[in-house]
Length: 112
Image (cartoon, rainbow, N blue to C red; front, side, top):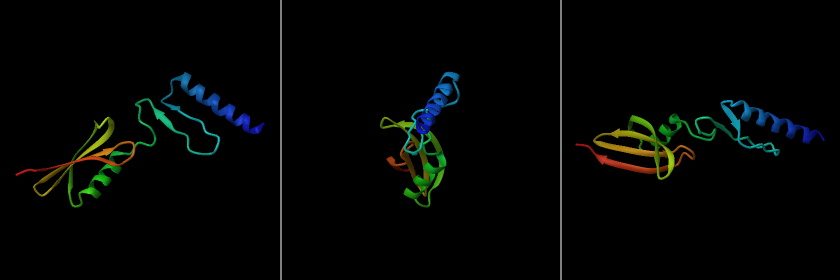
């Protein structure tokens, strides 16, 4: 009976957040003590990687390069961080998936 009460309280709290129009709404409630996924009003999930982490991933792929620009874009049908880097006369565009942190595209151009 105690377990049912906990689930009911969690369900009621979720319903209260949804009806009150709060900034964060719980997307799922799991009873096996795994993490609860949250979604903000902007549509990003708690699992999204930050721009700082995306820069670290890009710099690891192009060691010694300096970051010239960071922006959020859509690439191959998914949200991605576009990290522009420069190393010598080469210019790199590294697209990092905002959801998984994997590099989904890499462009390299010689700038003379």
